[in-house]
Length: 488
Image 1 (tube, rainbow, N blue to C red):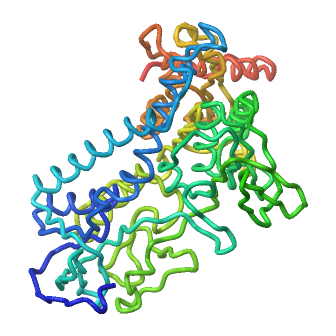
Image 2: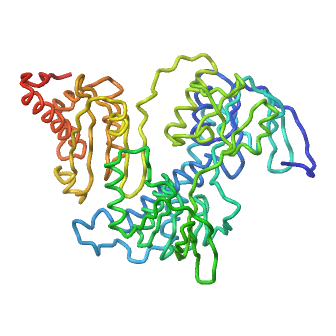
Image 3: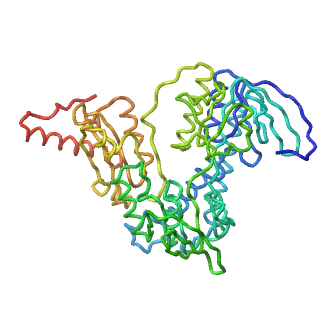
């Protein structure tokens, strides 16, 4: 890392907790330790404070999405016609101005939080000397050696870049490089129908780019509810997105007139730009993890137990570097839990009710289980659905396609899953998450009063739909009235 450079080595203080990486997981681990009265430090490179989340991932991509939604006037077209645009010629400068502003503000917030909690920010790259000592290689060639009782690895991931693909950052890009493009392409091939691929595919489709998605699996986002994903696919196809499922990319060629993506089946797809978004790689290759007794898998990920401990008892790993779900929200909680466990602080059990948000256009979000999972496990359930077109707020917003779906246990009436598609899905899902977390039943939602007009009112509509179906079954079987509704 710093070989061949004059290194001025200084041994500095001992920390109770040293965190490698300043993304959401690392931030929360360090701040949690500081709140417990422990001496904590975070190691991060100068140009990556806030991690991938702030600089190239979650925050810039979601900011870009917000800019796309605003500038295209997409949400207003049902009210003012399909030709409605706030700005007819949207440029990369229009999109990036908002992104740079938000990134700068978020970095400032993070630095302030760390300073306020007296968490030291050590600028440089970290490598293990042994399982308690980490060398921090500074940007000016100097390095320090830091000792710590506990270590949290939160280095995150980078886009996987196959050696057979010639990335140039302009016409063939990964999900980090796409934010640096100098124009909005007329056509684009997106390789990979995972969360990142679908989010960018939907954004560029909204901008008017002709998008083709290539995915080697037979479907996309297979961890989500199938009905919701079918609704998303329909909306994307309506915006001109073409899907090539069960297809693998053989090679991507660059030509003077653009790119040519050649599939294993022999199909050839011309496009201005190719976004290669087929997985991510843990950034563990520079850590010298073997010196600490650790070994990453072939995708650079570290294995952990239920407390986020690695095979070395006092070393934890959190965030994207441990794999699915690799979301900023779950990473934050992992960081907090790891720090609490390291110092013997009790922590509640939040497993099983963590929401998933996919910021495509339209949004998808869910918490709990899917219909497919419940059916496979033989769990009896009923479905309640509310469609945005039935809600006054949906009409006001111009969203006629959104839907909210509740999965209710047919016997004890608890909520088993909440699935939302459409405007504000990632916000709405938290109402269901709270009811599930408190052990509430569908009857709470039936009896609750929601503000009108709101999308949240969909919970009552969906709850009534589910209860009415359950009542109809009771009538057919002659078992009397359905479960007596009661307030909670």
